[in-house]
Image 1 (cartoon, rainbow, N blue to C red):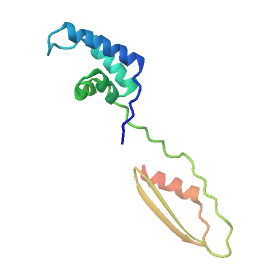
Image 2: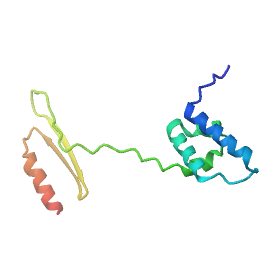
Image 3: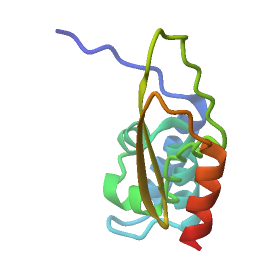
Image 4: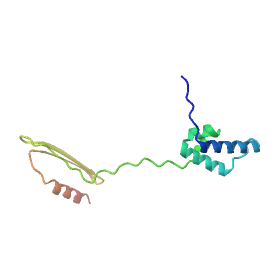
Amino acid sequence: MAHEKTAVPDDLLQLSQRLEEWRNANPPRTRLPEPIWEAAVEMAQRHGLHCTTKTLRMDYMRLKKRLPPAAPPSQPAPPAFLELLASPTNGPVECVVELESAGGRMRVTTKGAALDWAGLLHAWRGAAR
């Protein structure tokens, strides 16, 4: 199975040439100047860490440590309102409702009885305070 070579972006090639010129002009093991590190970080953010370190022949972990931390994925807020629609039935219906908050939990089970849900919720929240 042959691996396809992917085209290296022009800006990354330019940085690679600049880095090679610097390497040729300096003895081995000389610390890279900060502007080259900054440019490499920018390229890694644009084109990916693997592609950048491979093209520039840089240490993957050293460049990775210089990248800003990734923002954690945001979780959607729970709904502020939930509407429940029920189909009409012929006879008593069993209903179980569970409510949970920082103050505790409440479970209500009814069969065929109509409840004042708003009043019950208001009383439960008032008792939790």
